[in-house]
Image (cartoon, rainbow, N blue to C red; front, side, top):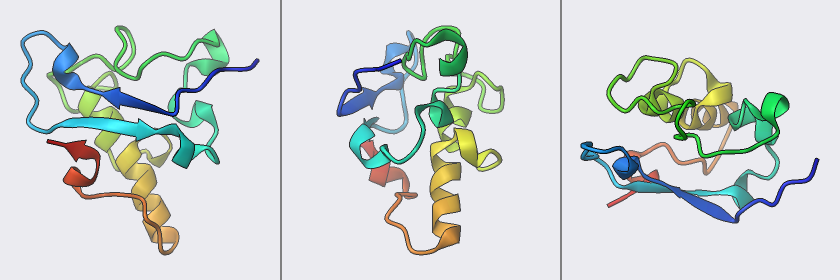
Length: 111
């Protein structure tokens, strides 16, 4: 199956009604992640063959809890599962040697 991949996507928790984010939006650059399989992050692809935003209803749409599997925060920030977390994957890359994978909050979150 072939997918059309946007060069970048901007993720914003502002989409959740009544939630005021503490940090800015994150623009994810697909081009710099082309050596990673889509399923690494989009773990529902093998079942549904539709790629949605990580924060789509029914996926990672829990904005209030940080520890739940459906948590928006956990999806991007947990260090326990490097295969399904931006921060976890970036930390693993740094452990393996020099890497420009960002870890500082403001490297990804633009105010």
